[in-house]
Length: 164
Length: 172
Image (tube, rainbow over all chains, first blue to last red; front, side, top):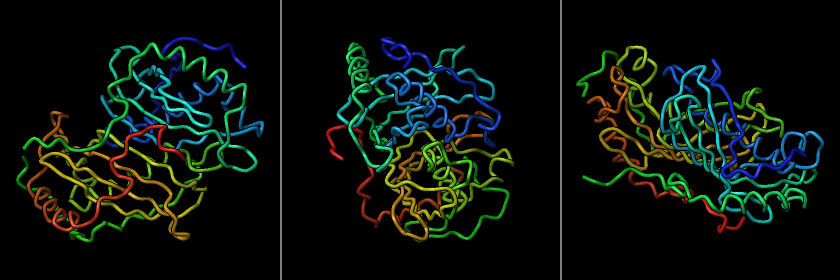
């Protein structure tokens, strides 16, 4: 396993907006924001040994149960992305976290993605407790992230404002 | 506000929920877990939003004619069942609310043959003025269609999975 990054938030993931992520509006399509965020989830899971190799080696999988995305600014083809990750909560089988996507050069917030991720037993394809090696690291990261305040994009309810 | 649109609008489907959209899980939507990746559920739902918009008269011609665009502001997905490559999907779309510039939609994705619910998506879509790339009111014929649809959709009960806030306190 890689060395644990104690940074709060986790600030390791970088990406670039690919040409095939662009739609007819000339910006990154809503689905591909989630592709980019899902790759950041793998960067998170690698921290506690549950990334690609975890599934490739048939140990386990991680499934997303629920996701919430706020689309804050457009990004265009070739734009560099920086994605940070904050763990909000966790239990024996799940972690609740939020990614923030920034334009890496211009610095503005492009989107956020709040997620609930569950550990899955490879053989039964059902939920299972995190492996001990993963839980130890999740607890260390979660403890490091307690210094952060909850982002305003976390815990949102969707609706239209009633002002008229 | 645009007073008219320079093309013929499709016949309005007023059935509530809107149940016209069908799709199939593409091979490239499948990830290393052997199922449709989380992101492509959003892509599939975005296409269902596209079907809702086309019913309003806001299809490709709206963008290609440089009249306007529609942008998603926010979206919430519940992943209820796995979907494999090639699985046929059927969607049901309920209009939960609307205002001068936005719609609040709730989609359900079903396995079209086995019938089970695969996922839900609650989303806010906003009308965008093409020239300014900023929000603007719906074109007049679209606003009229929205009110016609609202008269039907408002009679539906609020879906159980709408209005969710994420928390670990809800046990699975």
